[in-house]
Amino acid sequence: MTRAYPPDVSARLGRRWAEAGPSRIRLPHDAALREIVETAYHASLLSEEQRPLRFRLLVGPPAALPACSPRDLHLQVLEFDPSRRLSDSELRRLAPAADFERTLIGIHAEGEGAPYIWGLASSGAQWLRDIQSGRATHGPKLPEALVVHVLGPGQLLLGRGSIPLFELQGGKVLDSGHDVFGSTWMPRLFAPVRAEVVRLRAPDASSPGRPTVSDDVVRAVAQHLLRRALAAIRRARHGGTLLLVPPDDQGNLEIPGVTLKYRFADQDTRRRFRQLILSIVETLQTLAARDGVGHVDWAYYLQRDDRELRELEDAVVELAQLMASLASVDGALVMNRRFELLGFGGEITVAETVLQIHRAIDLEAEVTVAEVVDGVGTRHRSVYRLCQAHPATLAYVVSQDGAVTVVHARDGKVICWDQQTFGL
View 1: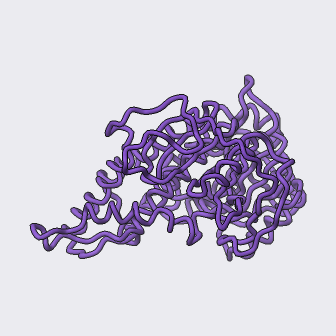
View 2: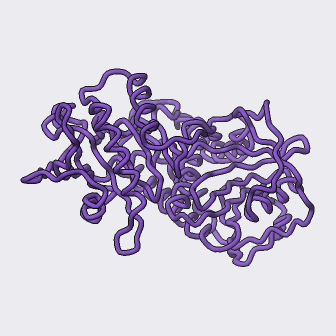
View 3: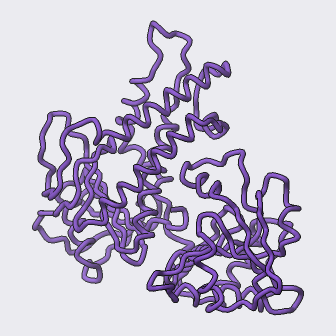
């Protein structure tokens, strides 16, 4: 994580853009690019009626957008007459008219001229649905133009179409960090739970021709539930803690090291994710049998664009939003590894002291650096104590500034990973 302000960001963007290969829509010249990024950055620090601004900029000429491909972006392009000079105050005024999920503010710079606002482009919410479901569909997609997502004060995500490149947060470029969901150790924690789901939907003697299902499907859907919950917590900008504890099949109501203020009754409703993932697997099996496919893997799931799956995906997204809302209450949201909602407002009661943690340098934490804990807040320190006392706990800690830390204990050490945030 390096400190860089907009001029440095625009130079880095040019390098990353070139590394991604050619695009039909090119970046504007250096001076205009710096002005666009700088203006978006300063606009992010403004507010409209005491609300932080959230909007997206699409950088490219309106005439070039439909030429990308018939499927790239089903645009409703509305050009201004005359166009407007780009400024942070103009973006502040336009932001309420450009719903973050459905509309982009169009920006262009002709030749060596100054960038200007040419109008609005309605993209629909399909791009967001794709991110939330974790898979690209056959629907419209953003063109390979520069898209600047203004997520909050000092927080910009710069992407090429739907592909994130890096994030600017409080003057820091976040293009390092780890996507811990891509590690081998984290999926291993949940392997027994995935095996349960696959076993419950495995073909039996009465259905010998029923397709089998890979646990990759279960893993991907579960990971995207967590990603969407963490993203929603970040957007709220108040921080939060999510704790995942091992399932207790003995009916023990106590959660080691945590006292829940709000505990959910032991009913099927708190096992909503289990119901959804079983329904997703069953739906995929039905579709695969209809297609004559004997085994359902993640690649098969990516190809599907069926109403039944969309409804189930929407329900997973709603569950993620609920998780984020519960995490907004003081204390931790606690679930088990089956993603069963146990309760929220959890107070960590472990009293022992943790003097240092080990910051992971790589995904598998084969190399770590010891750090003292004096520089972090109460939320982090309490999670460190819990993970040291109860190593089976997996914790996700979201700071008010949007940083995400994954905490787990191994071999007597509390290990922390800086989770890559631009994938959330």
